[in-house]
Length: 255
Image 1 (cartoon, rainbow, N blue to C red):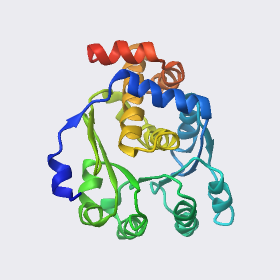
Image 2 (image 1 turned 180 degrees about the horizontal axis):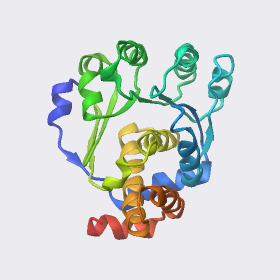
Image 3 (image 1 turned 90 degrees about the vertical axis):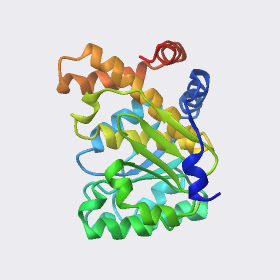
Image 4 (image 1 turned 30 degrees about the vertical axis):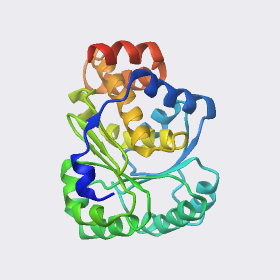
């Protein structure tokens, strides 16, 4: 299906039971996500995956990432603090993903600011069927590479998240502005999407489910926190406590 067709395909929101189904499968299977992520997001990413019911592995050494990825349910690649070693580790992760059919979530942090980041992104996007999660600026910087990518699922996060694939488009309007005021919260979203991709073959559905649950958790955390510092703690707690009843109540009212 061409990108033009994808762009005009109407977007829908997932139903509460669809989100709950994906989350239940994560909780039941407890997939491990191999995270090659940026140093400022490692702690919150690991804690958010644990709260979500998944298992984080945060290997970064070039000589072990392939072994760690072999048994993982999904792979996260985040270039927020790319360095010489992680640049060498990325091709090893992509090779495992290609050979073993592992879902990959790619977060092209600040790709618009650096030729190195654009080069790495271009190499990552050679892998078919990858999911890319970025903000509007990052996704615009990758427009040419995304158009050429095979089977890519595009997740553009913002006030309203947009998920676009060759089979379905979704929108997610849940969330809170405080989610942009704590370092690593956006990066952790990529890890939760990866966890859902480990149990849901349709990457667009997986992303919509993860972002819906995460956005609702952000709304709940905003009602309980005193500011950005306590928001992070409340967000982890809200993710851990997310259940079908909460999803249904929040999605039916829009809050």
